Image (cartoon, rainbow, N blue to C red):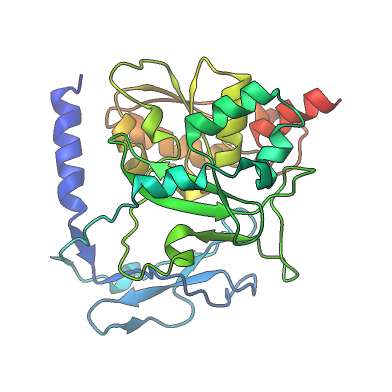
Amino acid sequence: MFTNKTMNIVNIMNKIKMKQYRYFLDKSSKKFVCPKCQKRTFVKYYDFETQGYLSDDFGRCDRETNCRYHNSPKGLICGAFEVKEARQSYHDFDLVKKSCRNHKSNNLIKFLETIFTIDEVREVVSKYFIGTSMFWGGATIFWQIDNEQKVRHGKVMLFNQNTGKRMKKEDGKAYISSIRSLLKLKDFNIKQCLFGLHLVGEENKKTIAIVESEKTAIIMSIFKPELIWLATGMKSGFNFELLKPIIKYKIVAFPDKCEYDDWLKKAIELNNIGFKIIVNDWLEHTDFAKGTDLADVYINSLID
């Protein structure tokens, strides 16, 4: 149960969510050239009052591990004002069901079948509603279904069926999109949740394990089924907004190699407002390459 202190903090955070500073990071998919790394991965700050972007040096680079550039207009913020929050959109669950019918052409599932039994793969596909998109031929759909069983988002990614790694285009960018984009749903408002959140319920009191990658959560759920494996889907997804629905659960976070310090700092902040998070540092003390995640280690142990 929530303590009075926790409930007060949650109520305050919910009120804060209805506030919007004059300057905020652009929420569209438009990207610019980063002033630091010169990659087109830069999200600019937007001025709500003038309805335009700030100068080119104000923004954040999406290359959170390799660049980390973030210049916010702190000195320019002159107060907050109320704005109406856009209503959350949801996909029809029938769309999820249809996407789960064509597993034979799914590259990621083909890879999983090379290291796990057919029954183990079938079980995890059903458990996480792993879908298939033919947009790139064999792409995987990671559906974000919340703890009310509502479908918030469908992330589409293409994997190599032999290695299980993400495939990249000639320009080095990964094959990644969303169901909203592929179906051209212009008025669809995405408010993301943790991947696998639908597995969390009052009757399920298992400890929750948090990783970054959806693929890692899926694989680790086979290796370590005694935990509920969820994924943030992005490095910056380890935050209050996404973790709020699981505040009363015991949580163990498994950051990728070299992300431990950032996740530990955030965990300390969250624990101060009622969370119970332990950040596992095992990967951080190994000789594995930067960016290595838990699934990589377990898969390599099978291959070796």
